[in-house]
Length: 85
Image 1 (cartoon, one colour):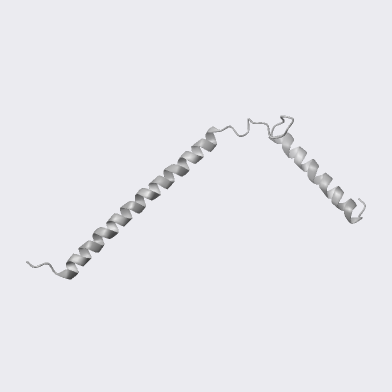
Image 2: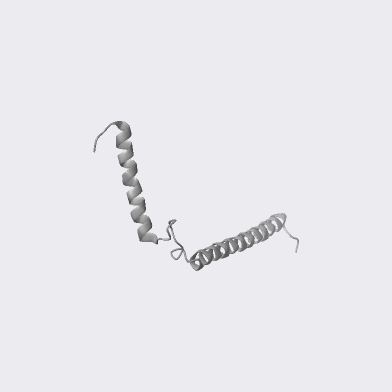
């Protein structure tokens, strides 16, 4: 039985495609593991326990302070443009 060149080329291409697919699958699994570790690291840090503003207040006080600062900025912009509130 003589090997047909077309059969050899086809078999080589099939093996090459399998090797590339395996390498891409390993890379994808590695990337997923990296993202999983990043999520676990982010969840392990207790973000809400750390003070958000200088005074050591929590998230609620930081939101109130941010809203107050936005209101002050609006007033200053109105004063700068000559509009009275």
